[in-house]
Length: 189
Image (cartoon, rainbow, N blue to C red; front, side):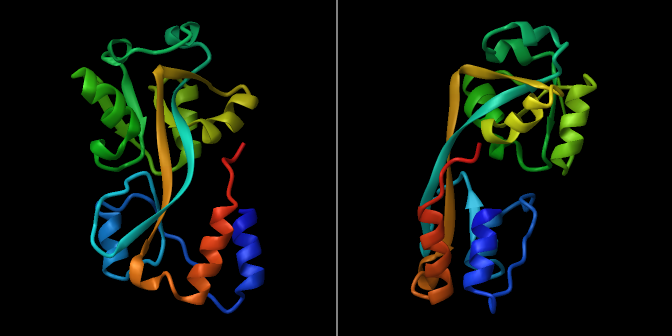
């Protein structure tokens, strides 16, 4: 938010609008010109798309404090086969916990339940309706409140966040302005 507020002051004539991250092919939206910037963990090698690394984060398992797995220091894939995953409504291959943790171990969750809202996801986990996986910087706020706890997935599932833009738009002044603000970004806490 501080970056967006700073950008709005510097570039008040540029309209900022936001789309949810639940598009089936968000890179396609960027390539077609429907959006100008995509925040993503997928740096797909696509002609005409450039990626700017933002920061690395750890995807952590989110549990109710009373969940049996909360007593463990870290979680292994086999620990989750009888669990319901509560996740955002995106393809399974776009979920860090599935793509980078469960699939390589050749196991899966008993079921998957989806919600678009982080607050609802946290509420479902806190009320023991399932488990979730979120970036460490997202779950930290809810852990401080005592609503949930998080545990590392194995030795840690680390992911990189990128800002993707069309290569052809990198010379546009307002895009350069945003890119320069992103260069100074540090991982949220």
